[in-house]
Length: 102
Image (cartoon, rainbow, N blue to C red; front, side):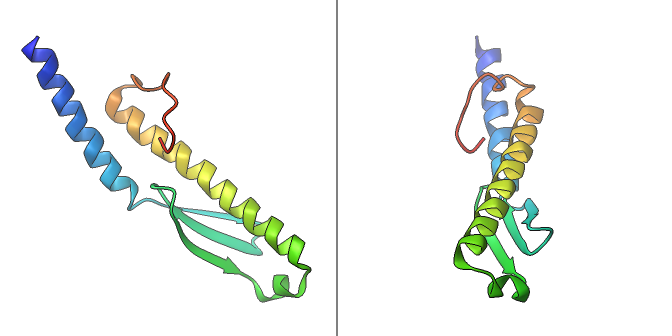
């Protein structure tokens, strides 16, 4: 029993380390063929948003769609990277759990 507890504690420490590392991972995503670029970290925080000047001449709705598309793409990529990192620590034990942000 104490062996299992020790293993659980070790896994918890490794998971905390990975969670800290996620803040340092930066995912680049774009939409509109690179007209809108975003950088999102592994904690799903938007770090940068870049819109090319030519896009700003377009109508508001198109710009909004491009931004939403780039952000959603970045979030999806960051979630996949997060899941991959966490599964490397847990050996896939959490793969059946759907934990938001993981």
